Structure formats: structure tokens, C-alpha cells
Length: 426
Image 1 (cartoon, rainbow, N blue to C red):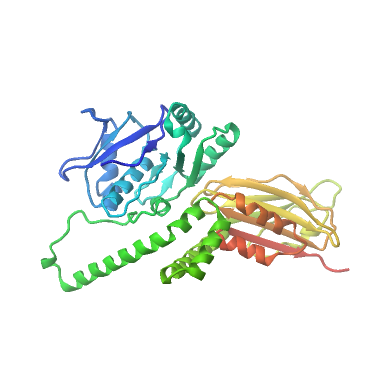
Image 2: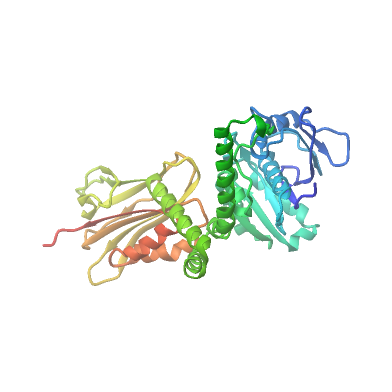
């Protein structure tokens, strides 16, 4: 089966998935060098990756055995799993009508768990260096490239590209699950379990037949929902929030019934994600005791919209930021002193990309004791955040809380934590 151009990143250079063929269910799956009889050493691992009960691919496609031909050898590691998962998704979708492969080079690296979750991998800098060397002599250098990996690896790649500026036309796509891949490419296949052998309908009781019919209806509705929300998912994955809001507004105002409901449920999805991410932010503020300043060592965890009263004291403070989620998220945090009849004084503004469970302590800052209002703002997202920054800065530097701007960030699917403390009037 002919597939879109798909590269698996390795430390020896990218390896292309040349072809994918279904084999007899009685034989095991193999990885081979293209157009050869040479089986690669990791074939047993690939077979376990495919076949039930250990494998994921059979759960997705319903078929237990394949041959994949690769342009070069892969001898170790697990970062090939994401690329081969994408290949199987494309192949399964191609068996259905209306499949339109992406007109781009798809570059992948990542591990995939049995539950379809994407995990980060190492050696990113070397893999990208070898990829750029390969692209130097390739026609793909002037064409679109879609880079798919765990959000932590995407952050590494973006930092590398920012410092080296390769000039490539790259779309970075951070993903956390197989369903994210299906959503980005608008595929109807995903992580749902598919049966390997279809039972005879004549032997199925009436209730089971009705159940299967209900599943079929659900599959059709899911396909329709995926088709209508795929453009919204792409904009969301790429952090293009202004375009996302405009597209949803057009769907609600000018679309048909499916458009209107698709926009409604996608907005609910974003708001639910924002609520979860807001709960995933862990913020602590600490007052630092120093000789002669009269300040005490105090620590408070910010869980509500209120800061402790002692933030008004002229002391040195320090913020600690943590990620309570099970995925990589980027957190921005700002602490502002709002001076009456003057512009807001932004005392600290920092960013951290945090893996699951990690905490980081930010640099100290000093409060001079003036001002009637102190505010702390934090936002968290697993998506690109460039378009969020003007909104974030507008809230952080406003003379008073801008509830409309906070609502806009929340509606983008971004977690928000906003807390304040007003000084007593004398």
C-alpha cells in the first residue's frame, strides 16, 4: 500500500516507511529493509506492538499481522513506535472512501503505550541534526514538514530551530495520545478496539445485534463529529486561537445544524480542558526572612482567588510553580503591584515548561509595600502559547482585573489561576 511520505527519526538519520502490507493472520508481523528478504532485529518487538493481547495496532485496525518495508535499518529503542502508529492509521484510513493524504513530509519520534498515550524520547538534538543533513539534499527542503512528537520533545525542537533557523517550512504538532493524531489529520480511525473476526449475524441474539447497531450509529456520529471539528482541532493544536474563535463564530452564525452543534461541543471541550489545566497548576508564594527587614518566613499555597494579606508587606518574595498533571505543560506566571493613579508595576514574569510532577522555584522579587492591589496570574497550556502572550500581558499589567480577558483565555482551552489581595484603606 502506498503511504504519504513518513519519516521515523533515528540517531543515524531518518528512516522512511516505504510500504505497509497486510499479511495472513496466522503469521507474525515483520519489519524489513525495502524490497529485500532481510528482516530487521526489532521485528519481534514490532509483532508484540501489533498483535493482541500485548499490541495496540490490532485494537485500532482489527488485523493482527503486517509487513512494513523501511528505507533503512532500525536496530534498537522504542521511538519508532509513533511513526509506525501513524503509518497504520494512514493505511487503515486509506481502506475507506475519501481518504486524502497530507501533502507534506510527516516526521515522527516517540514511544506509544498500550493505552495509546504518547511519551517523550531522548537524543532529539542528534536526530534533528541528522534530519537536517538528509534534507539538505532532498526536494522536501522546500516543501511543508509536519513534525509530530510529545510536547516536551516539540519544545526541544522549537528551541533548536529558534537558535539555528534552518529555514524549513515546519508545522510543529505536540501530541499526547493516538486520538490527537487522528484529530489532527481528520481520520475516522483512532484508538477504538476493533474485532479481529466478524461473528456470524445468524448466530447473534437480537439484543447483541441491536447493541452492534447502536455502536454503528455511534461510529457514524463520531465520524461526522470528527469531520466537522477537525479544522478546529488543527487550529487548537497549532495555538492559532484568534482563527479558532473566528471559525467557531462562523460555524454558529452561518453553518448548518452539524456546524452549530460541532462548534458548541468543541467549545465545551475547550472549557473542560481549561478547567482541568487550571487545577493542574500548583503555585506557592513565600516571604523571605532577611536580617533587619522585619519579614517572617511564611509560605502559602494559592488554591483560590485570594492572596494572603502579608503580600502587602515590604519584603522579598519567591514563587514556586508545579505541574500536577500527567503530561508536559507550559506555565506562565506574573505578580503585579497595582499602584494607585499610576501604571501597574510588574514585579516578576516567568515561564517554565514542566514535565509531569515537576516543581520549579522562580527568582526572588521585592515588594515595596505601596499599592492598593496585588495580583498573581498563572496560565497553563500543552499547546503553543505565542498568541496567548498579548492577552496574558494585558491582564498582568491592567490596573484592575480584566474579567473579559481572563474569560477569553479560559475559552481558548488554557488553564487560568488568578488571585488578588486588596490592601486595607487607611
